[in-house]
Length: 231
Image (cartoon, rainbow, N blue to C red; front, side, top):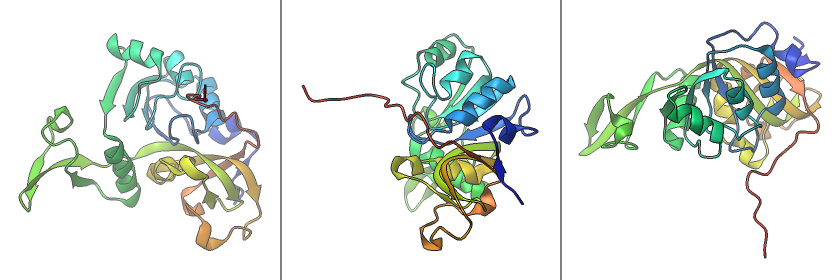
């Protein structure tokens, strides 16, 4: 089975529809599938629910889809770097399901593992717990959180073999493997592709069984979200 596609647009062919739920990997601007996000924008599909730790920034990442009004709902943890997101949310034009960062990670992991729900202390006694089941274990109160799955996962990896086994670099390992596991179909953007068997099996971060399509992006932009230098 050939998993390698010639472009991001080809990799999304036949996969994207209006109203889909899409899990997008990355942490801030680190490890985001930038070409796949741009191809999703160019598809024109709308009314999308995006599950992502961040909401991108103005003009980059998921910010591209917010500018074109293709996202109708975000399930996120940190959204503070996007002025258009802020404008749409405060104007009531964008739905937001605010989720603590660790809880969001576990909701994706549990979804990928086939676990429908779990209990966590995080959020008990706050707005996060409103409308959710709570339960006491060993004298401590917990909130039940339902897991998350997606119709499609868009992820970014450093290296893949032709079977789809993946390696992630450093911070890009945050959320990308979890998003990939939670997607019914997973499309990955990678910087390097090697022959099957070249990767050390003990070093693989995500097995190829989760990956359906691969697109090569050897020169990602890798923006710096906030540059801090010495005076």
